[in-house]
Image 1 (cartoon, helix red, strand yellow):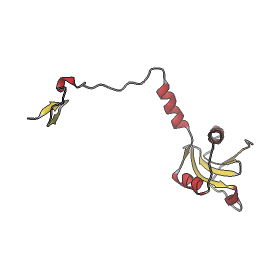
Image 2 (cartoon, one colour; image 1 turned 45 degrees about the vertical axis):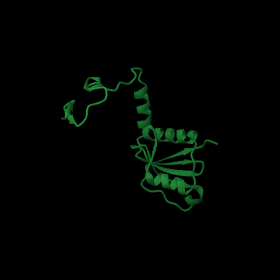
Image 3 (cartoon, one colour; image 1 turned 60 degrees about the vertical axis):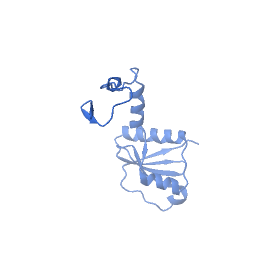
Image 4 (spheres, helix red, strand yellow; image 1 turned 90 degrees about the vertical axis):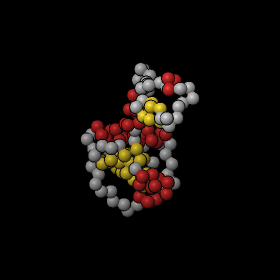
Length: 130
């Protein structure tokens, strides 16, 4: 004998019986906007492409929370000026950032920056946080 629960036939009866199951209960979020605030922060935050993550790791570049915040601020300023792709230089590290997507595309440290030519950028932001 098959039992039907919410329109689905199941080959068992729950221990508490079918009546113990709550129907169509939806998740609720606090009304004070905490969820929306966290979601907005995550969506607006800077992201790192897979390529950038590999470059950071292979070049042993570690970014502090403060540096990530400064990078985010630089991208926001570039966005306000209408930039699409920007070179952001901070502490002898260069980042190529897709401003529209707020995504770091690649990162280059000082040792590897010599004799490089940066193309396909429309702006540069220099950060001095020393």
